[in-house]
Image (tube, rainbow, N blue to C red; front, side, top):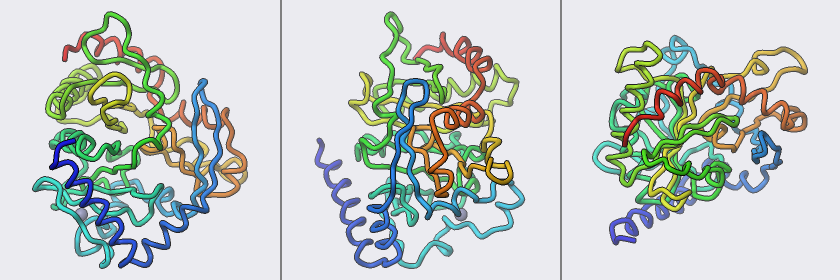
Amino acid sequence: MSKLKAVFQEEIEKLYLAQLEEWPEFAEAVRGLAQLQYRRVRVDRRTVLLQFNPRRIANALAPAAPEEVAARRCFLCTENRPAAQRGLRFESRWLVVCNPFPLLERHLVVLAREHTPQTLHSGTLRAMAEFTLQTGYPTLYNGPRSGASAPDHLHFQALPPGRLPLERQVPGRPAGSDNGIFFDQRLPRRVFLAAGDPGSLEEFFLRLLEAWNQAEGRPPEAEPDLNLVILPPGTGSAPLLAAVHPRARHRPSAYYARGEARLVISPGAADMAGLVIVPRREDFARLNGLLMRRIFREVSTGSGPFGELAATLENLKK
Ligand SMILES: [Zn+2]
């Protein structure tokens, strides 16, 4: 490890420990993590980890419609963030902070210092990959219509390594494939991109985006509905991997159901990566592999469009 990396990792650890001391609400939220309950279910022969986490209810019920988002104060802008929350600079553009509603210990949010919309056409993926390289933490991005709680303020998240089922679910690159792109049709459907460094991973992704937009008749500057996870070196065979989860919709039909049929599950990148957050006890008791499969089937892009996307991207060269 380079000295610079070690210093950055140390600074993050210092920030986390200091915030536990000086920010009582955060310390309480972190203490609460020890009480969380977990349960494993299987979807398409893979493990999905359910986390019963009542503190995440506000997040799961967060407004998603643009007019509702516009009507509230941006909670990632400095003036509206908790007074006790401190930040650590990352590059010139970003600030690393501790998530006040963590899924896990050391759950970080990396936010743009200026109020600017959530988009991947903005150097976001390169910064995520750079952060992953420097810390070893997987980074997660929710598209503005795919689970981002602040679609109006650019940000991504980072979680400590080894906690996302996705990290153990990277398929081997198909034999004879040398273009660094491969697909997993199982639910939730994933496109994997491999590259050697953050700059080429971003360049590769932007070419994928261009081909994808073109194939589906969107303008070049559009961003399809997706969640993205960057995996650290050593996951699978590639130096850096991006797992793209193309989305059909943000929330499953059960989210809008009434009475007992309702399931308050609002999937974002962590959920698509196999760590599914369940804020209500009754849902945690009821969820099983079949229900979870149905949710993934509804929110993932369909097998038809996914197959077409795979055919379009198959020839994309690194
Ligand atoms: Zn803002």
